[in-house]
Length: 124
Image (cartoon, rainbow, N blue to C red; front, side, top):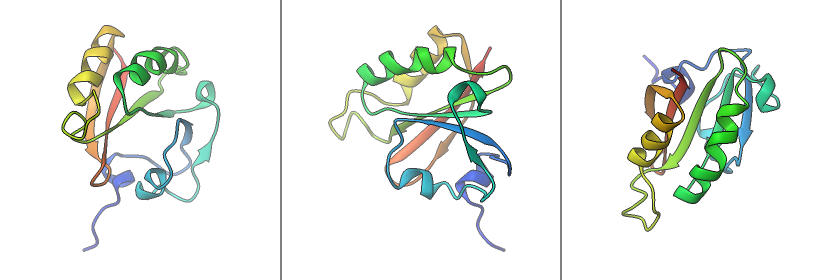
C-alpha cells in the first residue's frame, strides 16, 4: 500500500481552486497536489494558502487573507515547525491566538515536511 501524499491527508481534492500568498519554493511541491488544481486569486479560491514565518507577518497578512475568503472557502496558514526554538517568534499557538481573534475555527493541523506545518481554518 502506498503512503498518502500530504494533499490526500489534508483532503485537497482534484480540480480545487487554490490561492497562494507568500509561497515558499519547494513547499507547494511537497504537498503532492493533484495535477488538475488551478491557481487563482484569493477571492476566487476554495483554499487560500498563507505562508508566514514571524508574528509580524501573521498579524499583517492573516486579517486580509481571512477577509478575502469566498463563501465556503478555507484558509491554510503555513508556519515553520519549532519556530521559537529555531529563532523565529511564532509557533502554532501564535496562529491559533490570531485565528480565534478573527473568529476562525480550526479544521486540522498537518505536517508538511520537516520544516513546515499548516493549520486549516474556516470562519466560525
